[in-house]
Amino acid sequence: MLIGVPKEKYAGELRCPLIPQSVKRMCAAGAKVTVEIGLGSHSGYADVEYSDAGATVSDDHDAIIANSDMLLRLRTVFILKRSMAAGFSGVDNPLFFGENTRMIFGDAKATITGLVAEFKG
Image 1 (cartoon, one colour):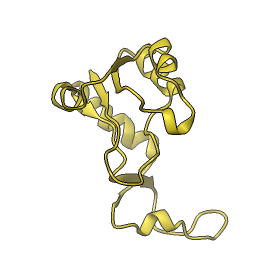
Image 2 (spheres, helix red, strand yellow):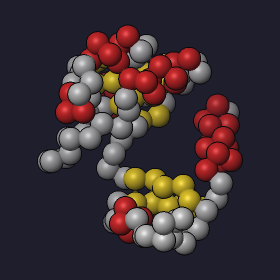
Image 3 (cartoon, helix red, strand yellow):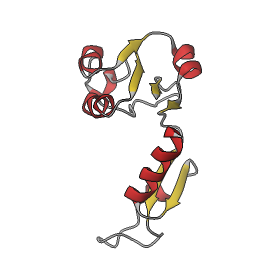
């Protein structure tokens, strides 16, 4: 599976959806990862850290999007949670109520395992 991680183009968006340590784990699990040049620059990660972790670093934003089996982006946030109840602290997380947030209810591990199985086919 080829996982592509293009830089976000939205004004003011400085986060990056993937850090080199996660790239290393994904590559160890058999994934191929391509990140756009400068992906982690605002988060303190150099391109060489991504390539050392096993990723291909590309300067072609459009090709990353066109050629990937899966994209990691930040525009829409998916949260896995058992219910809408407040957590242990009793404080609601404002991220839950963002217009770009999508909730997936259920056990996080079981849900992700099922999603991965679907992608593997």
